[in-house]
Image (cartoon, rainbow, N blue to C red; front, top):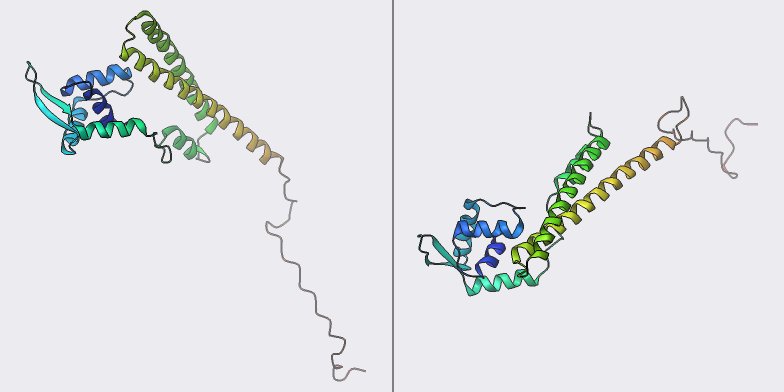
Length: 218
């Protein structure tokens, strides 16, 4: 998650202070990725160090306001114009868990898959209910509030993501069943046969036709 670019996008709309940025970020994303004030101010400090934001005075309540600079706008435009890099995917805990469960002593990987599938399906149902609420809010608002539309897009991404995860879990279970069936149908080695086949005994080499006779032979 790019907090720095999210904050730059909010600052492009006008000067903001730290806790205001946190509130607007969470409103735009439906608190899917909650931030704490410490994260916000740490990111703002780095952006200020890099010349992408600057302090722009205070509001009436004494909050320090931050504004985006030309360098920050250029960085934001670059972020919007370029695709998110998928060549180095983020670590996925579920994929790592299943990979480690393969052959782990005392672990039934199918139980792990079924437990995760139940959780994933429930999450998908919860997201679908939230989507219905967000869609109703968007359709009932003539102004088409940006936060409502943004939240709807985030929810739909979460729904697609959980749907894909559920399909992947189904695939993993089917794959394990096929592999188990293949192993069960493999021909067993004959009883008493050594694990590794011995190399055939070397045959005595016949003398060449023109070899000289052995001494003493008649």
